[in-house]
Amino acid sequence: MNRKEKTQELTNKFIFIIVVVIFALFCVAAQGQVVQELGSVQEKNLIDGFEKTKKKSKFFKNIYEDILKYGTIYIAGNVNNPYQKQSIDYVVRTNPSGSLYDVPVVEDATEYHEFDYRYGLGIRRIARFDYENKEKAYYDGTENNVALSSPTAAFDGWEYLFHWEKERERGEIFTNHRYFLRHTGKYHIAKIESRAEGNVGFEYNSAEVRARLPIGKKFSISAGAILRTHQQAFGYNPVEIWLNETNENGQALNPWYTLGFEYGYDDIYYTQQDALGNYISDWYWTDPDGNIVANTDLEFRETVFADLMNRYNREQWALLDAFAEVAPIVGADYYIYRDKFWLHSYVNYILPYHKYIQGDEAFSYLNRNNWGLGGLIQDSSLEQWDDYQAGIVMGWNISSKLGIFVEGEYTKFWDTEIFKSTIGLNIEL
Amino acid sequence: MKLWIAILLLIPTLTFSQSYKDGLVVIQYSADFVKTHEVDIGELKEVELMRLYLTQHPKIFEKENIKYLPTVVLYHNGKTIVRIESDISLKLPDNTLTEIQSHINKIVKQKF
Image (cartoon, rainbow over all chains, first blue to last red; front, side, top):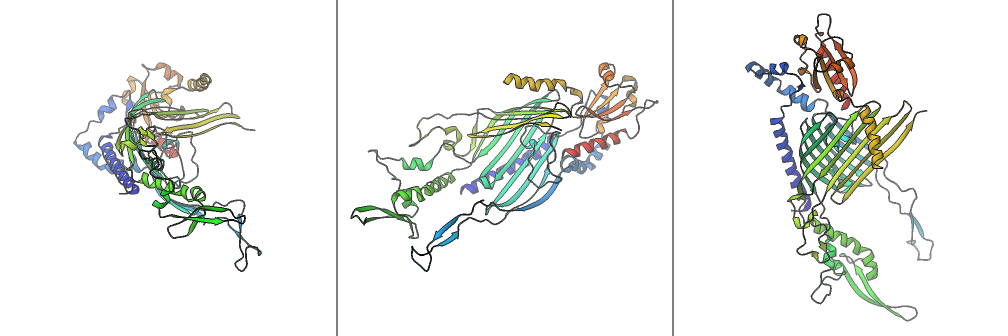
C-alpha cells in the first residue's frame, strides 16, 4: 500500500467519523429554543400524543430548516491567462547545416503554458460574521470566511462547506477539496474538516469536539479534544542517514555516488590529454538509457544527484503511514459588533499531551529532534509540544470620517508557522 | 506595549457593552398583570429569546422607554430592528410573531 492509498484509507476513516458524529448530533441535538426567564410557555410544550404526531410530520421541515435552509449549491469555473515571464529567454543553437562557427540559430526558450483554469462544485452554508462583507454577489468556491478558522460561529446550528475542484496552474493539473462540517450550540462545538491543496502538496484532516461555556454574551471558553493528521515525518532525513552509514572503521558504507547506481546511472572512467600534454582524468555519467548526463563527478553531483537525493527521500517518506494524533484543546472567543466598533478575537491552544493513534511513533513529531546522522538516537525521550492559533479582527469608526482596523491571525501547528496581518487607517474626504 | 493594546481594546469594549441586546435577540417586556396577553415568543426561530418583567428589571424598562405592556422588541447587535407594542386592550397585534420572524429571516439570510 503506497502513501496515497494510506492517505485515502485515513480519509475514509474520517468520513466514517463524520457519519458517526452527524448521527450522534442528530440523536442528541434537541436544539429547542430557550426562552430565558420563561416558565409558563415552556410548560406548554409537554408532549402528548397529538403533538408527537405533529412533530413527526414536521421532521422533514426541520431537516430543511436546520440543515438546508440558507445553503447554496454552486458550480463555477474560470479561465485565466497563464503565468508568463516578463522577459523572453533565448538560446543559441548550432546551425544544423553548419559548424560551430557558422551563424547560429537563435531560439525562443521561454516556457509557455497553456491557459490556467479552475472548475469546481460545492454546497455551502457558512455564516459570515457581521463585520464580514460578502466578497461577490455569488459564490464560486474561492471564499474564505473567518468562520472557517475561528472556534465559534456566527450562527448556532449546522454549518458546512463541501467543495471540490480541479485546476490547472502553469500547465500542471491539481485536484483540491475542502470539506467542513460544524455544529455549534450554546454549550458545544463539534467540527470536522478535511483539506487538500494539490498545488502546494497540502493535506490536512481534523475532527474536534468541545464543551463550551459562555460567560456573558460576548465571551466564551471551550475545552475538548482534537484529532489531526499530518503527512510529514518531521526531522527524519532518510538520505542523510543513508549517506552517513559507516562500518566499524568509520568508512562510508554508501559513498554518495552509489546512489546514482541505485537509480540505474553509471559512471565511466576516462583519461584525456589536453593541448599542453597534461593528462586529465574523471568519470562521466550516463543515465539508464545510456545518454551522457554529466562529464565529471562534480557536474553529476551538482545536477542529477540533487534530484536523486530528493527522489530517494520522497520514496522513503512514502513508505511511512500517514500520522494521526489526538490531543486536548482549549479555546476562548470574544465577539462584539456595533456599527462603530467591532472586535472578534479568538485563541486555540492544543496542550502538550499528544497521543498518536496512527503512524509509526518513531517517525512522529514526538521524535523530531531525536534524529541524528546515524538515525534515531538510542534511548532518546519523546518530546511533547504546544500548538496554538490566535486571531483578531477589530475595526473602530472613531468618527464618521475616520476609521482604524486591525486584522491578524497567527497559527503554529507542528513546525509550521503561518501568519497574516493587516493594519490600517481610513480617512474619508 | 501590551498594556496599550489592552487599553485600546478595553475602552471601546466597555463603551459598547450592552449585554442583553447583543446578537440577534427578541425581548418580551412584560409584567405579572399582563401575563395572559403575552405572545409565545418560543415559536420564533433562529433568535435568542428573553422575557423581562417590570418588577425585576425596572431600570431596563426605563432605559428602553417601555410604555406599553407587553412590548416585544427585536434587537440586532444593540440596534432596535422592530418594536411592537400592545394596544389599549393590552393585546399585541395578531401578526406580532409573523412580523418579527420575517425580520429575523431577513437578517439571518444576509449572514449566508
